[in-house]
Structure formats: C-alpha cells, structure tokens
Image (cartoon, rainbow, N blue to C red; front, side, top):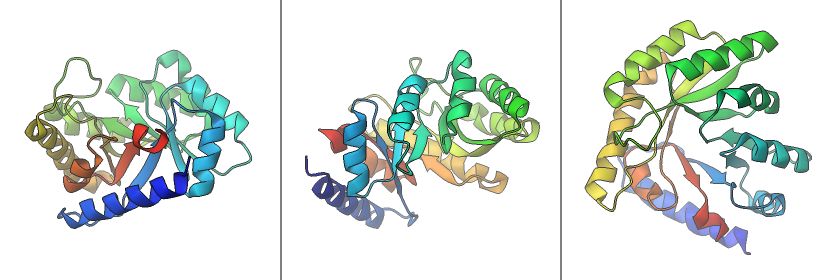
Length: 222
C-alpha cells in the first residue's frame, strides 16, 4: 500500500479544511491502528506518521513490544476498564483520550500516585448526549473538568475529546463538534491544549469546528 500518497492526500484535505475554518491551529493526526498489524504501523510510520492510537490495552501492549525500536507516539483512545489501569500506566502512552468520568480520573490518579508517575489525559464529552456513548454530559463538563484539575495530582488534564453524533444528519454532527469546542475554550484557562474530535468520515467538519487532534483509521489503512 502506498502510505506516502495516502498521507499526502490527507494532508491536503486537512489544509483545505483549515482554510475553511476560523481556527488556524496546527492539526495533529493520530492514526488509529486497532485493525491493522504492527507491520502496517511500521510502514505508515516510515511514510511519515508518528502518532498512533489503540483502543485496547492488550493490543497497545503488543504493538509497543513489537515496535519498541521505533520512537512512536502512542495514544490510548478506547474505553478504559479499571482492571487495565496499571497495565496501561506501565506502557507510558503520551495521552489518554478517553477519561470519561471523575470516578475513572480518581482511580487512575490513585494508581499513578502509587508508582510516582504522571500521565496526560483528555476528558471525554458525550456532546451528542447519546446513551450508547461514554463521556460526561456537556452541561456537567466544566464542573467535572475543574474537579479533576483540583483533586488529581498525577493525572494531568490537557483538554477534551468527543465522538461526533452517530447520524447522517450533518447539522447534528456539526452541533456536537461545536459543543465540544465550546467546552474546550472554557477549559483553556485551566491548561487545556487539545481538542480531539473527528474520525475518517467527519474529520474535515471537525477541523472546521475547531479540532486540533483528529483520529483517522479506515481512511489510512483501506
């Protein structure tokens, strides 16, 4: 597979999306590698993509071990079970995108304290208020964000993450992204740096709405 061409095409689409946005921030591309092998990750890395995301702790562990020779920037993007926290901490991901509650934040912080480590994370927002999705409700987001900031010494919040509304209604997707960006801007005085939203089907709209991290999987690997 010609990953160099894929990255060039996506980079052009990212730049075009930025031109249509009032936000002119740099965009970080995280390649979602959950459906591919370590060989394919290595090939995409050699083509120029340095950040990869996994949604299962065991899969992240396997790829970290198989690709230890490459200085890959690993992100954890899936729902985190409490019985996997210690294992994830030991892998030292650069960012957890899916801290979806105060309860989970406190548990991660407790485990980090025990090993004297810190870890950066994003607060997951259920901006479309969909019952099948994890994350805090938009109306509670800043209260939870500030509570985590003030109570967690080892888990360091660095912004927010959301998944766009699961619908073909572009207006609804747009609204869910705008909601997340609004929360991100409220979190800026508290050290927020990252607004992670947008996947293969909707990343251009997410960039238009203010994403500065996008998570792309199928568009890269198929």
